[in-house]
Amino acid sequence: MPFRLAGDIFKGGRDKLMNVVGVPYPEQLFLKSMTGGAAGDGTIRELPPEVLRDVRTQFDRQLMTREELEKEIALGEKKPQPTISDVMHLDNLKKVLARAEFEPEGPITETRSSPVSMYGSSRDAHLGLGTVQVHRNPDGTVRITDIWDVDNPEKRTADGNIMDLGEGGRKATQVFDIANSLGTYRPMPIDIQLTADQWAAAQRNVSSQAERDKTMDTYANTDLAKKNKDKPAPEQFGPTPAMTDEQTEKLMESLIAAMGSGAFKP
Image (cartoon, rainbow, N blue to C red; front, top):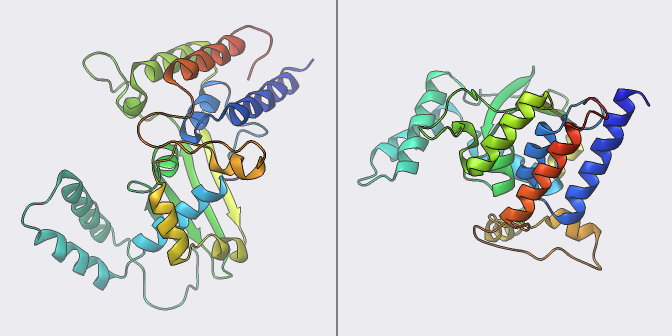
């Protein structure tokens, strides 16, 4: 069997398995990258519906004119006791202003590209995407791009953990090191093409956003639950994922072992 076909069959089974057992979206992206990348041509071409809506929400929140940006900075500088988050947010706003990444006045006459940060959004969007580029065209179509990868894996903490994988703990670093040594680690381009209607439909109304805000930290695969109404995935809140750490570790190890078995190349 040709290597590419065998790899595609493995990736299809891998993705189906992760959906069935309820692996959270950020962990799915991590595991895909460690085990040969995304199925097909290796590019992520769609987002879970709620994550796409999170991107639209963050885009709307961060879209500011120069005047609005300066006003936001002025308010931030007046806070008597800013938190670390406030300081980081203010610093980011100042960088945006310095780079002139504010919304120009007037209608769109050429493609406009804006970095959109997912920090402060849902866990899926925050940990899964980080920051994406949103490109708007005069005809209303939108393209969302990024690359899912491990940034600067050589930058590590004193105990050897990769800084960019801090949320994943020691196990994430170990899995990356194994995947990198086996040659199964693949950065994954993100390239989402949306029609004007699809981009408009991704905008939540006030009540929908309020409801989303209540479940921002849910680790359950709610999109999967909607498709499988007979056996909906239970919503879980707080620091515990739908899969336990032990289950996630075993799944990581099984997938890595399959990729390193020599049966095929990713």
